[in-house]
Image 1 (spheres, rainbow, N blue to C red):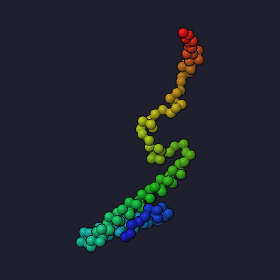
Image 2 (image 1 turned 45 degrees about the vertical axis):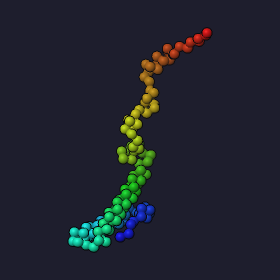
Image 3 (image 1 turned 90 degrees about the vertical axis):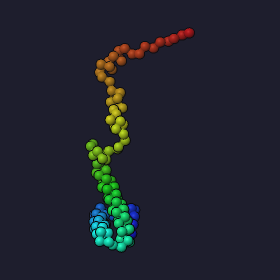
Image 4 (image 1 turned 180 degrees about the horizontal axis):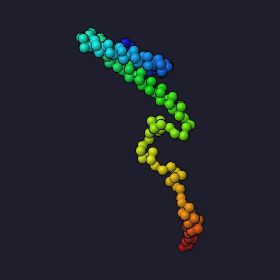
Length: 123
C-alpha cells in the first residue's frame, strides 16, 4: 500500500473518502490477522502505513465537515460551540465594550448636573 497524499484526498468527495476509509480499515484488519498468524515482515511494516493513511483520510474528512458546517452557520445569530473562536476563557467571558462603559440613568444625570470642576491655576 502506497502512502496516501492529503492534497489528493482533498479533491475527493465525502462519499469517496468514506469508501476509501472502509477499504483501509478492512486492509488493516487483514494485516492484523496476518500478524497474528505469523505473516511476512513486509506485511507487518505495512500496518504503520495503513494506520497513518486512515488518520490522513479522517483528518481530511473532518476538515471538510467542519468547513461545511461553518458555511452553513455563517451569518446566523447562534453558532455551535465548536465553531466559535476559541481564544481564552478570560477573553470569552469579558464584557463587551458597550457593556463595560454602560452607565445607569442616575449616574448619567449626576455627571451632567455636577460636571468635573475646572480650575485655572496661576503662578
